[in-house]
Amino acid sequence: MKEPKPTPLREAWVIFFLLGVVMLNFPFIEIFNKTTTILGIPTLVLYLFLGWPLSIGVIYLFSHRLENTSAPEGSEDDGRKDRQ
Image: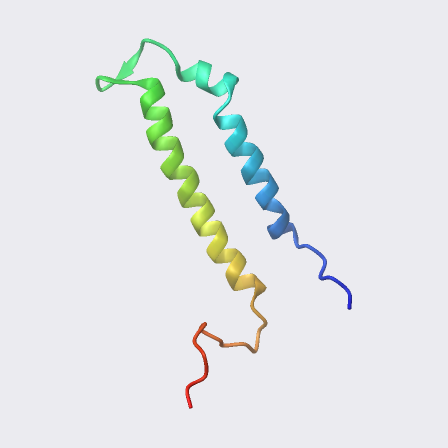
């Protein structure tokens, strides 16, 4: 049996992983690691506490879209076993 060809949507997981790695490494951390504050909160803290929930939200939305595109069209299986 042939393996299904990966869709561009599935290949985007690699992009999300690389983006997360880049966001937590030297260039970006150093950009926000300054003594400046916004509303009394250091910019590094804002970057981390706003960046993480934002990235989690994007991955959440992406995973739901991926689930919707991977289900066959005629399939209305909601994950429950057949009841007899």
